[in-house]
Length: 211
Image (cartoon, rainbow, N blue to C red; front, side, top):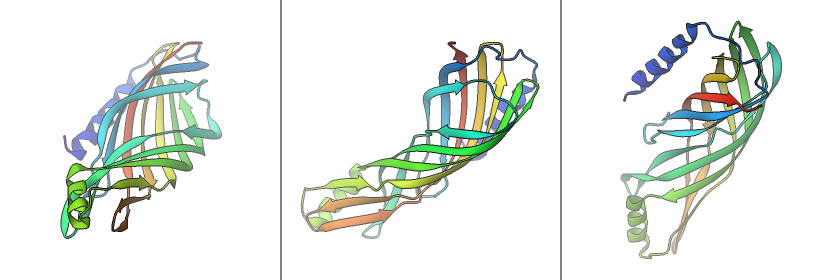
């Protein structure tokens, strides 16, 4: 599916919020699941989609407030090795973020614009094709890889819809800024690749209040 088609799907889902519903009045802590789509902004990188855990604390009210989140994701990154463009490997970005934002409630909708920042603990696994090129160029089978941890920034817009007194529905979108370095160590030394792992992130989730 193209990036335009994905965005169109998210817009259609937001418009589906227009139907009236009851407020999620009994929510103090709600849990559920979400579906995430990650779109890499660099041509040589790839995004992906996965199912994840969703949660909600309390019920949204209009005004300014603190925000926090995780937004872990994985992206396939590319590089050029000895003049050959290759799929370098899989980068795992695991941020822990806090921030501040403003929420506006309109009937059963709560729309928030937030800016979060934090620190990401990253991991990296080298792709088979890239590993073969490194072994061939170094003349050694010995390889080790790593990824530097980095600061991340995440502006986002989040929309909550109360479906009834216990069920809430969420759609959110944001832009993750992450710029770690990955390293590949062979017998001949260490090669570092600066990575622009920025992604556009879209998520749809549903939660049920357990108390």
